[in-house]
Length: 215
Image 1 (cartoon, rainbow, N blue to C red):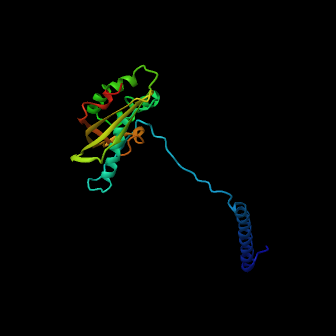
Image 2 (image 1 turned 90 degrees about the vertical axis):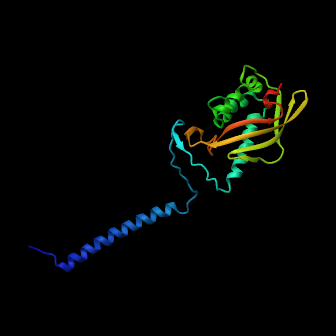
Image 3 (image 1 turned 60 degrees about the vertical axis):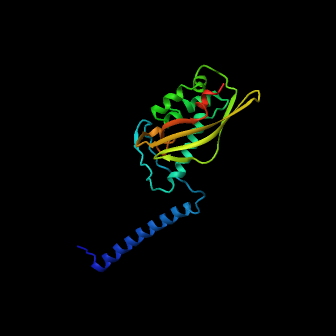
């Protein structure tokens, strides 16, 4: 019976291992050569698709946050504009004033939303009127001033121009109260990312709601 001496066996095994490693190295070099240089960078995003009705928790700002007054003032200015400014596009106006999904609805408490829907301008725009030849804009006069906890007061000029170029203007003082929504639906996060909504909207000067002066 023929046997292989241990030194010879070890040598053969080492030769086989070396040959396998060399072959693997060659394959890797070829693969890397095909990847280098990379012609362009590919970025991949892994996303989920949550339902719009899924509720999320909104963490309110700390009262000591130095940025809170900036965010609050920006929100109040934007809310007043969205509520009062009018453009001659009924479709866009209805989308921002629509009940259930409009931005004014999503940022208003029921106590604030109710009187808004009873204004003359709301009834006209949300009614069966195909044309709207009127532009109304808001010009703020001064800063948004704190009045009490989560309550602010501001003055603005309401300027309306019809299609004939007739211009009317009137000054108003508004007291506005806000609060932070602790929970909201996933589909509302882009319309109201800060979770702020208006709990009080009182006309302090000007003789009534600006939207009741729109003819």
